[in-house]
Amino acid sequence: MTALPRQTKILLAALVPLAFGLEAGCAEGTDAPLPPTTSASSSASSSSGVGGGGAGGAGGGEVVPEPDAPPVLTIVNGVNDHEAIRLCFVPYPDGGDPAPYPADPAGLAFAAAARVDPAMLLPADEDVYLYVIAGDLTKTKDLGCATLTEGNTPAGVVVAPVAVIPASAFVAKRSLLLVPTGCVGGPGHTDPLEREACGPTYSADAPNPGLLAAAMSRVTAEGHLSLQAAHAAQPMPSVDVRLVPGTEGGMPQQVAPSLTAGAVGPFPPFRQVARFELGSIAQTEILTFVPGQFVKTSASPLDAALARGGLTQADFEDGRAFTFVAVGAQPGIAAGAFWHALTWTVVRSDP
Image 1: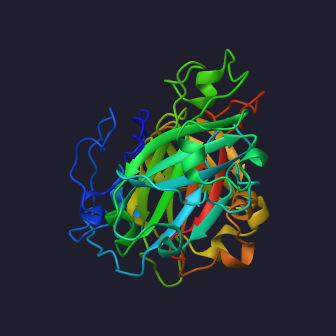
Image 2: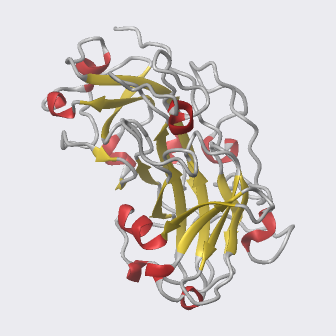
């Protein structure tokens, strides 16, 4: 058996112990402690609590049970210094040779989303070691994960070990979101703005691949949208996430206050706006603000974020649940030589 390398420091802040059978502490094999998680539900909640948890609809103290449903996995590519990635889910600790995901060597584009049936992708009842594969992905065609992760990587291909994910995460009756984050490095991936692009711990000699792993809430409300936000942009500080309607004089709606890195919130989800109140989706924007202030740090069109998640405007309807996923650079930093600007992707929380 080939020994698996120790993974890099990770952003794994949003795993919920009750949902995934984990205890607070360190992810297996990593130097990075898991920050504490909270939940506004007395049940086995599937989402992290975020400041202002009462934003869900009925005010602070609202208790909403998270419904059980078949496991679903949604993957969003948040690796900011490459155009696309592939992933290897290698059985842990014994190793193996699964095929990379996606099967197409073109990979999953930056900020793109894919819905996956865990049973079709992952070994049954086994923990997996997640690797990010980037760089010249054309050279990964017809190669298995054993070749890519055990030191036989083709020139121009970058392999970054990220985290061990427990098997319980993939069988829990929750809607699981996985977002590889940070920057995995590569030739020329250095710049005076590299930390604003990749995160405060990044350097060309020490890349900072990470992972947001969290359950999205499937709690919905008749006649209203059910909304959460996921903070998977390592360089971005804590923000208020607001949605400004595409109507003249529309007032911003506070979707997720004080959203911190690695968190998904709020729980219960924000359920105080109906689709018709947003007016034109083409004019509706996702905004970030300094927490508790009126200092806007970014504005992004909602329709483009829906398209990245494979959704149409017609899909964005009342009675459904959605998560806004933030990836990329710090707000206000333009795309650079090897990185992308702050980018939002909307995915279905209840696919």
